[in-house]
Image (cartoon, rainbow, N blue to C red):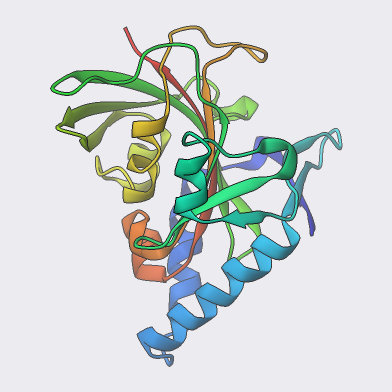
Length: 231
């Protein structure tokens, strides 16, 4: 699947209203039917992937090849890694979240009892509407990285957005539950550049683990997130 996207045309208004419009079109469906539609959309995305191109210069903003699903058992047997060359994603069956660790990072994991600021740069792709919905990795919003305040309490991670595009677009400090799943598996350094070894993960987040708009609209999102430790 290839989609065109005009990078300069991202707007917070569009990001906020698109999910509402999507939900309104499905008022006559039961929640179970909406979840079934969502699950079919996820399955199609896993099978086909996507490619998003910028309309202004035809550069590729986001590319996802067909995904190879692996179990949690295989993931842990591989020392909590996913084989990027085979495009492996682990499916966490309890949550329905898929995760690929593109780069674990070269910094330090957030230690037990530690609180840290985490800087996030991301693409958010709406799987149900086949569109790049939100991104602070395009020119218009590069100066709006999302800052999360993260705490590790005996291996259970909690987080809230203190600033950034996600907080502005969705008017909440709540971090999608799907984002938290990645935190035990990354090592957070401070350097950021195109070729740095800061952590990079990819996620498929179902509506049950997403932000409020995804939950209310019953749609899944794909995320590509670069994470680094804040100062």
